[in-house]
Length: 93
Image 1: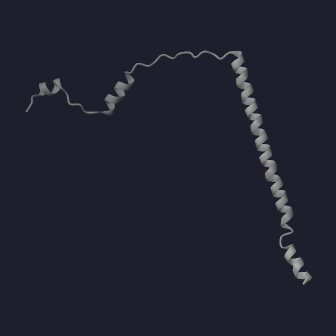
Image 2 (image 1 turned 180 degrees about the vertical axis):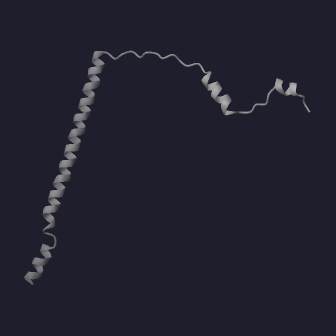
Image 3 (image 1 turned 30 degrees about the vertical axis):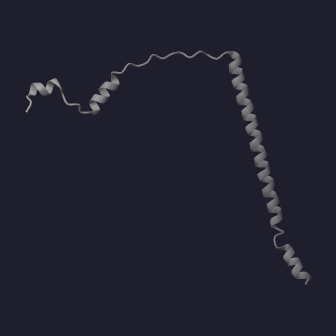
């Protein structure tokens, strides 16, 4: 059996949460680097692209909702006529 000094000279490798947290807190933190600011033209282009995308999406949504509304109105107006042809045929017989 090894004595105490031998064990303390080479401690066993046991993973503990305390050791992990200690090593994580001892890490070097990278210094923040300032990103270059976009030029005026780049900012205007970004605003213009966002506005164009928004307008295109508005057009798509408007068209879709108008088609759905037209379909609902058509179906509602036709629902009152459902079965009418059969009724008319039975009356004519």
